[in-house]
Structures are given as structure tokens and as C-alpha cells.
Length: 282
Image 1 (spheres, helix red, strand yellow):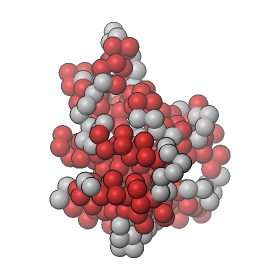
Image 2: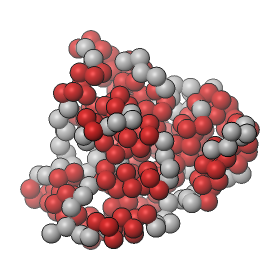
Image 3: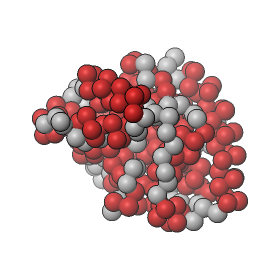
Image 4: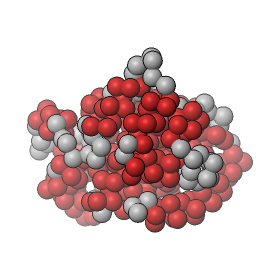
């Protein structure tokens, strides 16, 4: 028997537990929506929170983006990566903080692994704005975090089903809640006014054919999710490797040699990611 979806949606949309939200994130969003805003204006706002700006720069200079040590300030990050990517990074670092505070280390690693893999796939398939695709990978499982925080009893039942019946997280959520983490991700994307290029991969990473506004990015995050699961980096909540949607695979035109290159590069980047993970909370 599922819960009352509307009441759960209202509860989740009212939540105030995400660090830096609604304060600095809403201020950043407001600035970015103004045509008169310069990169320095947004950078100055982010830099007012020293811990936040330090963590944004740590992500930018990690193996995730391939700019090791080359981006020294938030203004430079905004110029190189663009407003939407940095906005997503601000949100991502807040989500990472929340994962760390709650002890969701496996999901934290999985999210970073998916982001890294998505970025590699985007570059290997000549997809525009690979950094944006990486941010979508960082955020794709935000719904799982919110379910665990806001619905702890139901989350325990979901874990029990995964353990006793070997269901996927997605299937167990549907059985217990009547909806899943991708649905919660959609609600949050709407609440935060995320652009379609971020919200579509969050909403449809399990059903990429449904993406209307960012089908290629959604397909990449979908494939990246499966690859990083198969590589065993982090834990997405179950030990299953999801089947890759054939249409998504065909859209990306990943040949066997390209797939081999992707696996080799991702494996190398994930080794380097261990240092980033160990130091992120400091």
C-alpha cells in the first residue's frame, strides 16, 4: 500500500534541511536570472561563504573536470564553466555535505563516480558542455538522500525488501512508497528551478526515453550509472547492475573501442577520486 503521494510531495517541498538552502542558493539563483549580473557578482556572493567556495573549487580542480590546480578562484570557475554548472556545483556541495553528515558514504561515492563517468562519456562522444553532464551525474540520486532523511521508517522497509527479495532500490521504493527517488528528484528540481539540462537527467535517468529537453545528457547519466555500478565504485543502495536502455546506447553510438577507452579513463579517474573523497569533509 503506497503513501499519499501528494502529502509526501508537499512535505518534501517544504523541507529546510539542505545546507545553504534556501538562503545562499536562492540568492545565487536570483542573481543568475538577471541579465545585468556579471561573473564577479555571483563569485562575490559564493565567496562570502568561505567553506562553500573552497568546496566548489575543490570539486572544480578534482579529477572530475580535468583542471587540476588550474582554477584558483570562483570568478575563474564561472568564466570557464558557466553559471549553470557552478550553480549545480553549489547545490552538489550542499548535497555532499548532507550525505557526509548522515553517513551516506556509499551513495556519496556512487554520485561522484557517476559524475566522473558521465563527464568521460560526454567527452568521448563529443557531447557539448560535458561539465553540465557531470553536474547532472552528481545530482542524479538526490531523491534517495531525501527519502532517507524525510522518510526513515519507509527507507528501512525499502532496505529490507532489497535484502530479502533482491529488488533494486527503484523497485523497492515503488512497492513501499508508490513512487521512486527519480520522482522525488523531479519535485526537488521544480522546487529549485533547475534548468532542464539538469532536471531531465535527475528525473529520467532510469527511463531516458522519456526525456524531452535533454535526451542526450539523460542517456549519458543513465549509461554512466550502470557503468559505475558495474565497476563497484560506491553503493547506490543495492548490488544490482541496471540494464542499459538500448535506445540510449544507440543514441550515444559508443563503439567497442570507445567503450574500452571510457572504462580505462574512468578507472584511472576513480583511483584519483579517493584523495578527493577523503579530504572533502575537511
